[in-house]
Image (cartoon, rainbow, N blue to C red; front, top):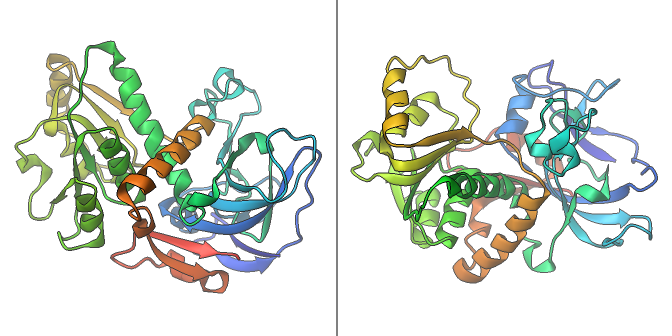
Length: 354
């Protein structure tokens, strides 16, 4: 079978290879991959910045954002049957089976010894066939077949928003205004989720106001901010919720002054720059005097995927084809290298195996 693999120890080693078709173990499902989405994590693994090989392997199959059909599954497996359209979750429990992993919160693993398909010690789904534990599969309605490959990044956005509201149960809170910094797939999906919840949403990015990203934000009633023209530090508004999704330290620090009293700020990026904050005392003082919360969020669990399915259906019914607009490039497997050389206006590139 065809598979897209790389070795994080060898920069730019991504390639298309032929591998044996996997044989599912007892209680595993055999999946036939429809498509995979490629994101910054896949590209960073290929660049050697991230990723860990499965044990006794010289490569890792990429693809943690996937849509597949169940090819084969035991009849005794509750809730699934051959032919079901599914999205596999990414993270799997740690070997120690810590408190959070054994209660379904693998995204909150205490030990750090978890496994992640296509990222950390487990092959992903960028192959004609793959296997998965059915307990970590999400059934997808046919109505979402054309956009369900977005469910993994959607789940990351769902977790961030859900945790904002959970944490803010600390006080009486009726958020009205939100800022999403960054308009990649996760940033745009977060914008859509917050609009569903009735908030006034500003989405900030570097693209021009006539870009596809701006059009998506505007068509759901959000306000797009081109930070090249109007830096966040120049915005007069104060926000109840800020979701920082750029992965850029300078951009992230620029959001702090925009956070209102009792506000909450969630960091979603991986900040690799070595930049010291000379005025960190000012940041801490603001957090104290304004009762602010700043927290980080990574990955997601099955509940966030399930909420993502519900919200995708709502978005499709309310905002029509806006989710389709996030998929800016669909390519066949033999053209996979295009996905690792994104264009300036790319939002999401999807590799099709069908």
